[in-house]
Amino acid sequence: KDQDKIKLVMPCQGDEYVVREWLVYKLYNLVTPKSFRARLASVTFNDTKTKKTTSPFYGILIEEENQVAKRNHEVSVTRNLRPQETEPNAFLTMTVFEYMIANTDWSVQFQQNIKLLAADSTSIATTVPYDFDHAGIVDAPYAKPAEELEMNSIRERRYRGYCIQDMKKFDASIAFFNRLKDDIYKVYTGCPLIDARYVKASLNFLDVFYATRNTPAALTR
Image 1 (cartoon, rainbow, N blue to C red):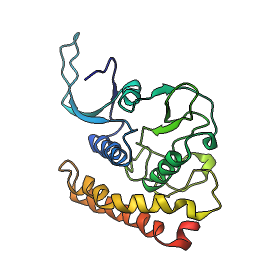
Image 2: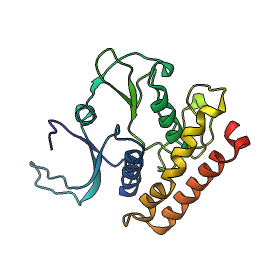
Image 3: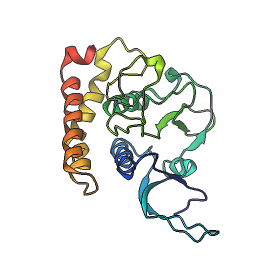
Image 4: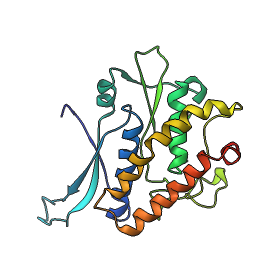
C-alpha cells in the first residue's frame, strides 16, 4: 500500500536466517512506530529465458523509507551528524535495543544501517535502524564483528552509544524494556516458523540482557 518502490531482502545462507532477521524487525516495531515495517514473503524466481523456476524461499519486503516518514508525519533527511546531535531519548532507546540483540553493525556518523527522520529539514533528527542480519540474536554463520571492535563473536554484546556518566539517565529505558519483556518474548514463542531449539536459545540470550539491565553493577560495567 502506497509504496512506489520496495526493498526485497534475499537470503545469504538459508531461509531460517531470513526469518530470524524478520523477527528483529518485529521486535523494533514494538519499541517505536518510527521503525521499518517488514513482511515475510515466499519468493519464487522464474527465468524468462530458460523457463526454469526456483523452489520457493523466504525473503523480506521492507517498507519504503519515505513511507516510514509519512506514517510518522515526518520527512526523511540526509545529514552528516554525530550521535550526540540526534534526538537523545530515541537514540538511547535505539542503542539499548541494538545492545539487546547484540548488533554492532551500525553507525550514525557513517550512515551505516541508519536512516534519519525529522519534522522538517531543520529539526532534530531521529535515528531509525535497519538491516539486522549481523545481530547476535540472528546468529547468521556468515556474520562477523568488525575487526576494529576486537570482539570474538557477534554473540558478544557491545554498547555502541556515546558515553553517559549519569546512570540515572538509563532509568526510563530500563523501565521501558521491562514493560516490553513479555511482548518481546512472545515474538519468539508465538512464531511457528522457527524451531524449538532456536526459540530456547533466543529466550536464553534475552534472559542475559534482562539480567544485565536489572543488575546495577553489571549495567554500569
